[in-house]
Amino acid sequence: MLILAIDSSATASVTLGKISSTVAGSEVEIIAHRETQDTRSHAEVMSVFVRDVLAEAQVSSQDIDAIITGTGPGPFTGLRAGIVTARTLSFAWGVPLYGLMSLYSIAENAWQDANERNYTEFLVAADARRREIYSATFAQHEAGYQLVDGPNVGAAADAPALPAYGFGAGLYREQVDAVEEFDSLHANSRGLLKAAARIGLTNLSTDTQALYLRESDAKVPQARKKATHAQR
Image (tube, rainbow, N blue to C red; front, side):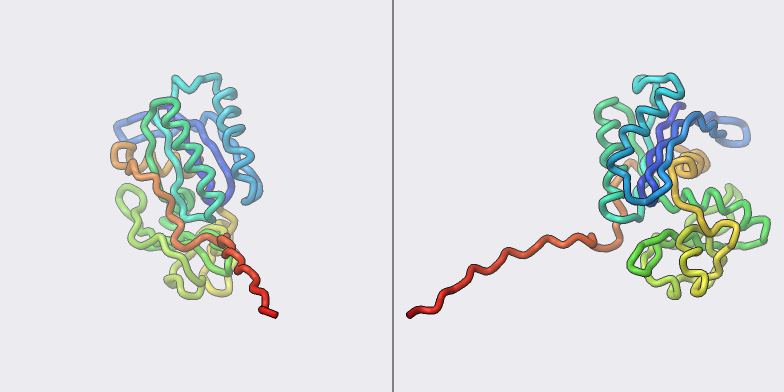
């Protein structure tokens, strides 16, 4: 199956890959990938990245079998850009759309290292700004790993005392036990696609509601009160 994966919970990224069933499970072939280096230019690049990965693979929208979008948690505006792009393409192309928590992407890149270090549980953490992190706890499992708690948002010092993977851990290494070699990991569509293959497409949710976890930083300005004039 040819799958388009989109995530904008941290950086903006788009991945085109092929998921194949094998005796041992599912295998993923990454065909094309695009990702920003910053975390604030999502809306400008999403459609361009989709166009670029399709062009690189020399395929059209008619070849896509399904779309997967990261549902966060993430900043309000950036996260919305990726989800809206995925929903629009799903509707326009007439293909199924699945949602998956973006922190699975970090777990996918961390679990083998955690297993080699004999960590039965580990934390993944992303930058939530406001001096907080988005986090989730995963445990080793016969299929690789499984979610046992989260997603959550809060101060890094309040997170479970577990080995921590991801950019959020690197930001607050004095408060968490950050794994140094993995303290710059962001969630992205490549990891999301691999995590989806491990879970199995038929086990994914069709719910693509964003996991904001808290209100937007942007506030709607209140209407100004009309000035009153003192009577003479």
